[in-house]
Image 1 (cartoon, rainbow over the protein chains, first blue to last red):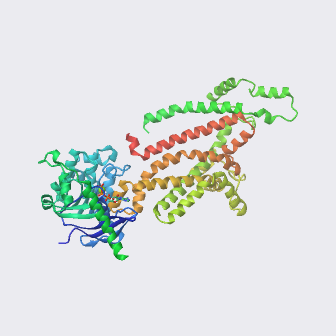
Image 2 (cartoon, rainbow over the protein chains, first blue to last red; image 1 turned 60 degrees about the vertical axis):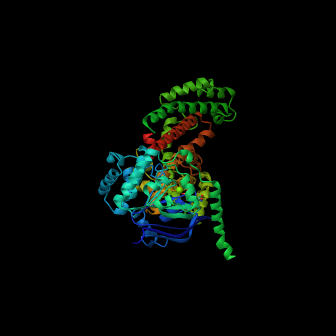
Image 3 (tube, protein in one colour; image 1 turned 90 degrees about the vertical axis):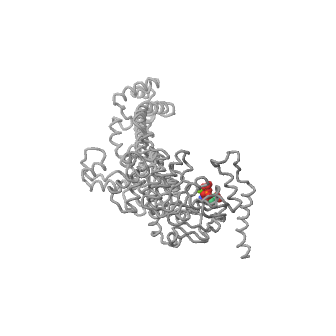
Length: 291
Length: 335
Ligand SMILES: Nc1ncnc2c1ncn2[C@@H]1O[C@H](COP(=O)(O)OP(=O)(O)OP(=O)(O)O)[C@@H](O)[C@H]1O
Ligand SMILES: [Mg+2]
């Protein structure tokens, strides 16, 4: 069976700085893969590379990204746009800023449905109502007529999740979809993602720095640091028998129900420093070889 | 802007106008030179001058003069122009429409040019051609409207005489209109030949007023477009597979319009101020042109009326801008 997402040896540079240093990763159909790592590890860049949303000054210097076997980087622009939002969807990090502030919720969902599914205005409206029902928004008809600033952050994230799953995507990239929300809302949003991906049969690449979340919803996981994959595998295996010192440190830094809070130890700065200098040394290797 | 705010602003209009009136009234009488000095023939006797001053009430203390004038204005009488010897209100009503129409045509040209330039510029964002657009905007912005007036006059009036360079309309045309809004009335009543003749005369002064303002609109809008395009919602729209032109037009433009109208709309007052010199250069019979004569002749009643007319236009414009911004931004409507 072809993997839903295949990334091979992906290198991304911003100016002279390497952000991804040869990342490989696979997401199988229907699989939820956690992508964890500290801030600045390159998690968002990886997601943006898949969506073709790298910043203007960033470039892919090596590697391959394939969606259902088709090379996304070699693809025609129009063909790629046809996949985005329909077969590959994004749940953004910040619901407060990810909806257009001057357009009604209904218009924003309706546009998407009309664009990708070719629905009529009326059919789109009805489908939008269904979608809001699906993410447990009460009075969906009323919410459709509201502007984003008139609903809460949790509601906005529900709307964004509804939009992500609206066209039955094969792959959903969720970039820390709960970090901007408060704890109780976080849990509801996680359950929602879990329910919707099951119903729509989507695979999810779930970006987070919370191992607790990974343990709860991800079947497999990839640990990223300084643009390198340090460890990957089935979540159960990685969390029980972490092979890399960094993963062990991450685990020690994660609060758990069966452990007193005093036992928490932050990731030692020595370790991250060592990993960063290792990464920078790797950057020098090809240059040294060429010289 | 909600109703409460609108009412508050309307209530503030009379005191604002009163303040403007006080300042103009006092300033005119403090600075040296008065209308009598401009109208007396050489060799007039002191007694004659005294009698003239008394005739126009200029021998009274300033406070007394102001009270008298305010009383008249309150009953709709702005006095008589000293130099033109006509009722000031009638003069204003005859000339104001010409200026409003000129400013309107100039604003329309400026907005069209500015929006197109901003959209082209943003489409070329990050490419070398973006510099050409930015450079062009910079040049337009650096040359003030009265210089554009002279340049256009020389170019299309003298060097390649394509367009008329003076007046509002050819004297031989029989207008036969009811209002002084010649252009608007002729368009509304379907007299397009007259409208065309009017526009023919208007195009050069309007262009002179429009070019710097177009550059201003372009710069404001382009900056707002760039800022909005970097916002999350525009990025997320890209992740939904919309094309860049479509995102710029449907997602980014409605957002970028809000700061552009808020900041640029108020700048139409600059364009209105520009009519003074530009109308003069093209002998266009609006209130700007009339203002220069009024100042040269120290025509106190006319100057006072003109300044109030400009003040009313500025206030109305500011209100209009706030109303439009409220219409564009749902966050302001619901608070
Ligand atoms: N627009 C940009 N220009 C230059 N460098 C950038 C830009 N965006 C990100 N970077 C750099 O790229 C690296 C990876 O950033 P990325 O946003 O992918 O990290 P992340 O793992 O998502 O972190 P976080 O958990 O904070 O979201 C970081 O070192 C960051 O400094
Ligand atoms: Mg990130």
